[in-house]
Image (cartoon, rainbow, N blue to C red; front, side, top):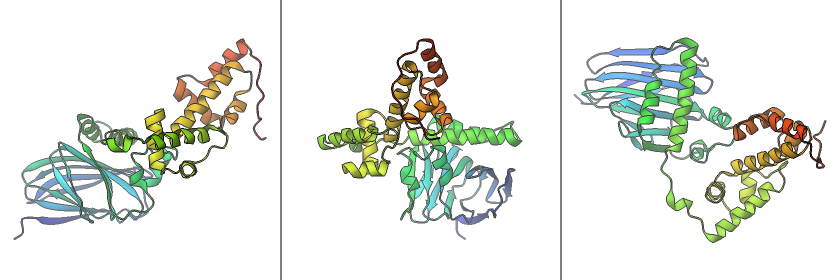
Length: 331
């Protein structure tokens, strides 16, 4: 009789999005477990599992999804192995957590006997992640979101106290209904940010040659030449002969931020100076520096400087300066 008994846990999803828990309870000779699958909202799922494992077994969650989802698992207690169909076997436990995109969504979870397991995981759809970052996905996450992959993409990281505490928070004791959903959504976003930030830096990739530094400086000049119509990342990289990833690495190294961050900061600095020195309407200044919607400008400005641009506008009105010529936005 084999020592490793395979159990197949099937989850029917269909086309519906459930706001309540789908709860599976198992109690037999092999294990006693409670597994929850929660649809937090479009493109976001949370998985919670607690188990006493009596015999070695393998669990294979199945959701029949074909879209691109990123998955993560963090162990609060216990240890298990995750095996992907194309070979990688990942350890999740006291020292290791994972964020991955499997080539095929069939994944085996191997549990060893004689332990208690408490595991929290989440799934995020590709489109939801892109929307979270307004299209400018951090460079750390981009390999997981490539249009086509030929092998599973895996990020491993140290399971820090912060990650384990966030995983524990996903169990959200004492909260129910919409409050639990809201709390869990915020916790997943914190987990994603902490995991991306916790990836080990590639030291060799951070070193730039003298030629690359010149290319990066040239790229900045091209980027900021026209705030209304700046080149996209791909066009900018092609214009100077670097890959998009290498260009962003160079910008971080030389200027302290990604291409998008440097452009945003440049726009907002120009806007701040204009608001303090001109009596030009805020809408016109926002348009001039590249914002078609004044609400987006106000949000970005407030996040950058800790105050709304209206304050600087009032300051300019109380001590008016000579207005500079502007290009009015289209009607």
